[in-house]
Image (tube, rainbow, N blue to C red; front, side, top):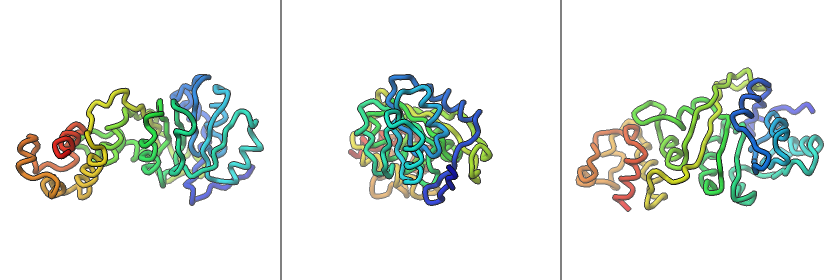
Length: 254
């Protein structure tokens, strides 16, 4: 099948066989795994995964790719969910799933946040993403890459940067380098926010204007007395606070 990548779906198909093998080795699928692939495309990961798994679930929005998959794979080996991944309820597949995918770079952050809503039923996740996004996911405080994405994901997940992938491993080649990341939900949250909606609001406010001090960005939420009580310098910026400190602010305000 000659399938042209569709820009509106952010499609870049992985073609480098040595990279594909490295990804499958990192995922290490086991026969009894319930695995879900997001955006299978032309089967770069699907085919090697099905050599290790009896069945695979895939979430795909592109009708042309779905038609191709229906003609390519035996019906009993692949469960196709024709859906927009941002609206798909992963809990419908099972209570303990593993998620993989070469995510469309234009909506990768919204997909990650959507998966956090389903995180209770996920064993682990392995994703190909824009390298810059993976660097932000795993970034430590007081670094340029550390931001809202780092804090929100690190609250829920343990993450590991695995492999850097060059543009020429894809067709069409993206304009950026890519990276493969492993995300494992914490078995027990290291820091527990009493109100997760408030936690999200505080993190968003703090990073909303990241060049400003916390005294400015959290004005109306936390006053000087609050900063003093928590022993947090109000002249710091959001990027200087750890996940634990954001949780401490949340629990004080909650």
